[in-house]
Length: 194
Length: 252
Image (cartoon, rainbow over all chains, first blue to last red):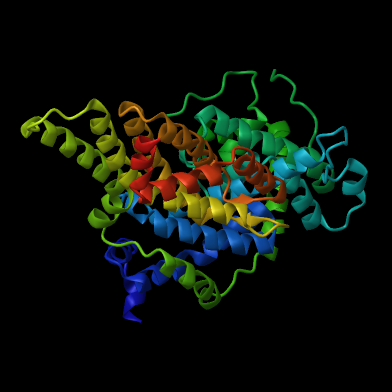
């Protein structure tokens, strides 16, 4: 089990010299967290598996561009997020093409009635997440679940600081609007303080 | 150091959420929450929504085992093992266009250093340059043809993964630009025009998504077919291999 102790940096150095087994160490170490991230962004078990695989393949091919001073885990998360974004965007484009000729775009957001009646909050959360734009979803997941700061998310997704904030808070607002009634959200506006 | 909140103001929802994530002026927000029951209620409802999202996404994710993941990854990684950095990058990306440029430069210098005993007709000089360019571009065209063929014959129906094609298109794009510029400066409009058409398709593939849906693939196929690109590339590649075309052109 000695190899389990090897750092990411040492494993990367070995991969760069052509040692494929060293890459397995990185896959074993980060596979679970990358799958979790991909699942949260795609909301699909099958897509998450595909995107996890895709992220590791891209990371392997781009390893010569990885700056060893940076965190491999963060770099990998950025690659995985972008794989998921590409997937969601291409699906969205296909849907938009399919519904571009006068048909209304199908919304999978739970309406207020459905939210109120639903007994399965998790299902509604997933349905609401699917209504977010790919960028909103990825930015929100990276902030809320992965703990990346707004300053880190921007470059990872190719957004400005302002664009990142807007994406995250649009996501929060949509989630609050859809799920608020279900979790007893407070809707009153604060009065000015005396 | 925190600036605190101005008297009579309440934090925005954004500030409340940011504070939960430890960003923004969280110390000032916490201080405000201590004394404002209204904002505590707003903060609690934000937290309830975020907790609901966390719970929903915590329960379902069941990753493949490391062994299963590796079993799927390993064959694809072996297809393209990264070698040592110094060798791999320049060889794969730059060698073909650099060879072309070097051959052209060599031909030019050789012409200046060793002047011919008898005057060489201008047409022959152009042919030599064209021939060198043809030879250098031949491998590039063959690799491009294979890529176009794969895309044109990709199985219909469902989404297909073109991530490896994207990487190859990026590599070819770089060579293509250099060859196109060389063809432009050596005055070969035919090669330049085909490379120009090719470059647009390579650009689309290199910068497009990694997964192509049926409609996207169809549109790409149509572009390849409408422009007759595959045919043009194939003809040019086969001509590049045979020196006869120049002689034939002279005969006619």
